Length: 194
Image 1 (cartoon, rainbow, N blue to C red):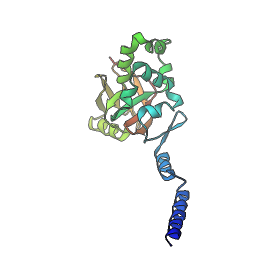
Image 2: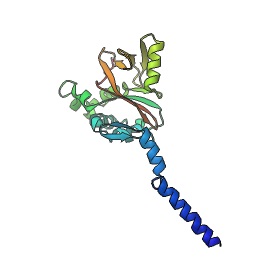
Image 3: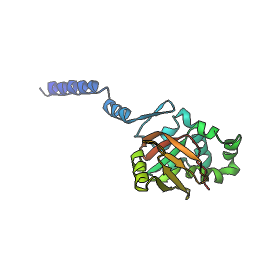
Image 4: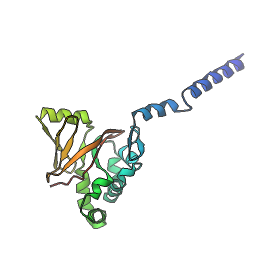
């Protein structure tokens, strides 16, 4: 009798596993539903900033820069962080040779300064940023990990723009890429600290 009960329980358990898509299928499905596609890859909220960024074809330059600056451990840390992540096209807008110079060991301090200027402590979604802009009557200031300020504006309904210390503007092109240790806001221009 006990043997029949064990067999019956096993059959029921197997049927449940198959119904939800295999071991972990339900979990994978729920994360897939919450993921955002960036650079041809799904960005999973269960992974940290670095684990997701390395899969984006649009962020290979940023990932190389983060590695060259020695910031991998920081961005894999608990956070939370909000990262304004420039795409490869954003880095390509810089004067010729800039990226090659920045990733050299002798430029590590400057590279670190630029990269940490793209990071704000805390978990800030587009809705959080928009609320700050509305509360600031059209503008909001954010203190970066580098120590400088970024200005957030909304030049048109539903769009957010980041203005750096030099007055250059970056548009958020993909918002709210949720991470286990924060959020990525993809931008189209590299921000330069003052």
